[in-house]
Every structure is written in structure tokens, then in C-alpha cells.
Length: 398
Image (cartoon, rainbow, N blue to C red; front, side, top):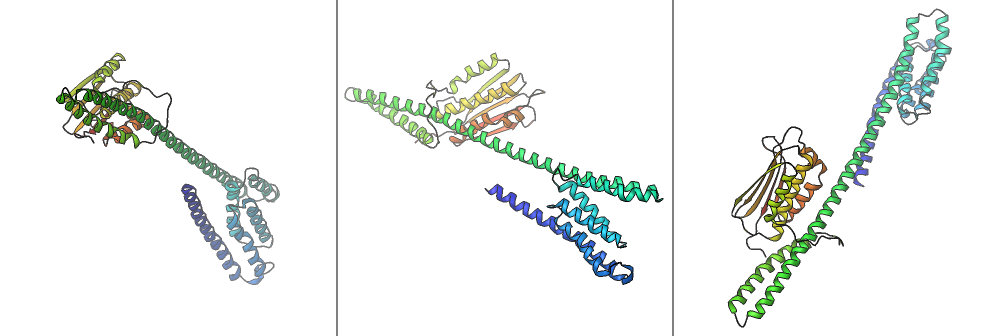
């Protein structure tokens, strides 16, 4: 609705501006013609000044409606100019008004009516110019005007075609933009649903572990209090992690999916297997793990794995490269993941992956869910594409 209102307001502003310009043109033609009529002696104007004043209004005022009623305005101007000429008027303004009207026929008249312009030129040639040539009028004073008039009408037609073409292109661009937004929205919704299913599995796993540990603690509470205490401590830790994942799960708008995958979710420990599969597809992948490797929250582990997986998928789909670098850094308070390709000639990951957008949308959704940041784009040296994700680590999950 806002877009339609903005377009309506722009159209109104443009219409006012065009009408203001037409008023200036009409005023200039009318005033200059009036000055000529009223400065000359009364006897030099057949029918008197009053008649010619009316004719001036008749061939100038129609210009105010030339865009909406192009053919009617043109016919009125030509008729008034012809009468004025027959009465012996020696004014140049009717010619300029007729030229503007002829251009308007080409640029604003509907397609079936626009040929009134060439028809009027043909009538002038047949009934005015040909007799003048027979009476001895110089050819170079008559014939060039034909081409000028045809050129004016043709220029109007060309401007109409350009305006229509611009309108069509603008509508197509708007339709493409709306389609891209709808696709991006669908991709976000699908990715959120997928994330929710995976988080559901993680929460269910945490609850299952807690139940088993609670059973063990219940059996050992009399015979081995230390073992029971350790089990209860593990239940607390697992419960806090599960509650954190549950909050993230409830933060997503999801839809039920009967075909949800129930396979165990991957972790960062399975990155070497992923790298090995990519190597089998051709690229040489270098994997580097820095920092102290430790177990993280299941959701963080899954998000890290998915980021590497999607980045490697983009490399296989879009990059013509032979070398890929994967770096995983365990920082005290964050997990950094970086995937780079070497960017051989012909590689177009930046244009293809970001333009396609759905894989990167999924990455941003996952990383943003854990309060992380994701940077994608060309490498600083301009050679290749880079994906860098940073996931904050909560030392005391609630």
C-alpha cells in the first residue's frame, strides 16, 4: 500500500510539473502573438483584432490538454492556424503550436490514432505544398519541411516507445525484487524449521540423558552417595544446556514436518570426515584446528558443522578451485570458523553464492541464533571467497 501511495504521489508531482511547463509555453506563444496583433494597425488584420485574438486562444489553449487529448488538441490547433492564415495573418506562433501538437500526436495519442499526424502532413503536401510548387515556389523552401514534420512526429513516437519500454523494465525489476524477497523469506522459514527440528532432537537427547542419569542416581543414592552426587551434578549441567537449547527452540517460528530427520546430529568431531568427502570430489582441502579442543554445547557444535558444510558446498558448486582452507579456532570465549578458497581464474563464489543467497541465509540464521556473527565475501587480498563465523561460548549455560 505504501508503494502504491508513493507512486501516486510521484505521478501527481510529475503531472503538476508538466502542466506548469505547458502553461509557460502557452503563455509565451499567446503573449507574443497578442503583442504583434495589437501593435499593428487595425486595418492590417482581416476581421479585426478581436477575431485574431480569439484565434490566438484557439491555437494555444489546446496545448494545455495535448497529453490527454493529443489528436483533438492537434486538430483544433491546425484548424485555428488555417483560419488565421486565410484571414491574412502573418504570425509564426501558429506554426510552432502545430509542431508541438504534431509531436504530441506521436508521443501521447493511442496507437490507432497516432497516424493522424502523417495523414495531416500528407493532406498539407497534397493540397498546399503541391499547388505552391506548381505556382513556382522554390523547391528548397517547400520540400525540406516535409522531412522536418515527419521527423518531429517520428521523434514523438520514439519517445513514446522509450517511455513504454522504461515502464515495462521498471515493472519487471519490481516483480523480480518481490520474487527475490519472497524466495528469501521462504528460505528463511525453511531454514528456521530445519534448525528447530535439529534443536528439538538436541533437547530430546538432553532430556533422555537426564532421565537415565536420574535413574542411576536413584539406584546408587543408598549404596554409593558419591556416584549419586556425580550423577546429579551431570543432570544439572545437562539440564542447563537443554534449557538453553529449549529457549532457542521456542524462539523460532516453526511448522510441523512429518518427514523430519531423526538421525543423530553431526558435531565438530565429524569435520575431518566431511573434509575427506570433499577431497574425494576433487579440491585439496587443508584442515587446521587451533586452540584446546573441547566439548561444546550441542547446538554450537551443530551450527559450526553446518557452517563448514555449507561453505564447502558453495565451493564445490561455484568455485573452480583446487585448494580450500578450513580453520577452526577454539578461543576461550568463542569458536571461530573460517573457510577460504584460493580463487583461481573463473571462480565466482562471491557472485553466485551471494546472489543465490539461500545457503548464506541459512548460515546467518544459525549463527545469529547463538548470538554470533557471520562475514562473507571476497578475501582481503582479492583472491577467492571467504566465510568467517564467530560463535560466542557460554561457559555457564543456563
